[in-house]
Image 1 (tube, rainbow, N blue to C red):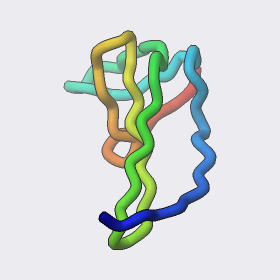
Image 2: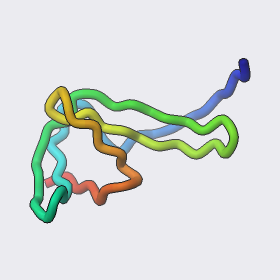
Image 3: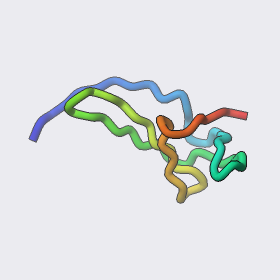
Image 4: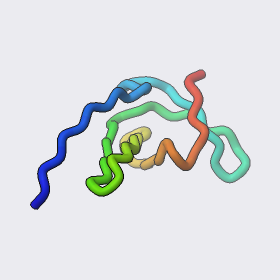
Length: 67
């Protein structure tokens, strides 16, 4: 098993309301959890937001706005 260290600052906080487009419609949801995904190979850091307790949103795949 490889051990890695990383330092990341997420631009979102639990409780923030965010907007994103899904299926041509603008959705507004609350951030209920933040998952940090780190690549051991490249060091690339991705934030995945849990919204309204069930929906997972990858911040690299969607344009996320704070209303």
